[in-house]
Length: 147
Image 1 (tube, rainbow, N blue to C red):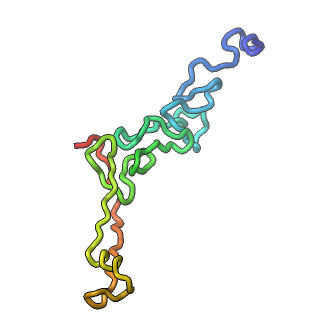
Image 2 (image 1 turned 180 degrees about the horizontal axis):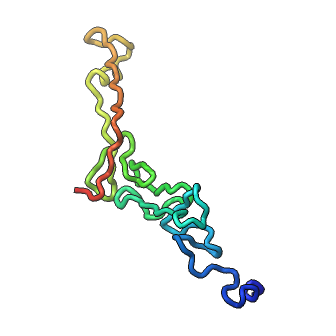
Image 3 (image 1 turned 60 degrees about the horizontal axis):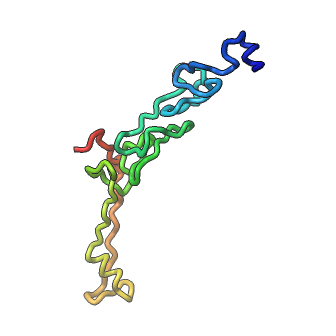
């Protein structure tokens, strides 16, 4: 009541209409669906940025108030959940937009796993197949709408 009187009977020390996507009694944090840019003061007009969570890859529309990280579905990565994680590929499903890439086992690898004596199989010496290095191409970016 005292704050109300000190404000000239206008507000009581509580903000009524926060601007620039802020919220709280004193407009001191970003409202839901926005996150704080730590390089700007909360009073700056661009201090609160929209979450911009991917409509298919994210499991919600709100993000972490500090980092801006959206909650991603399984197999999805990125701040806005717009890429398939390593070892995953894009599917056509809105429920599971990224599915695990099945691991292919070659016949030689299968024989090596069965052989009791390392380096010797029933067909003579078995040498290990050099493993292919994983592609270093960028992760697959999710399409805004699935085909």
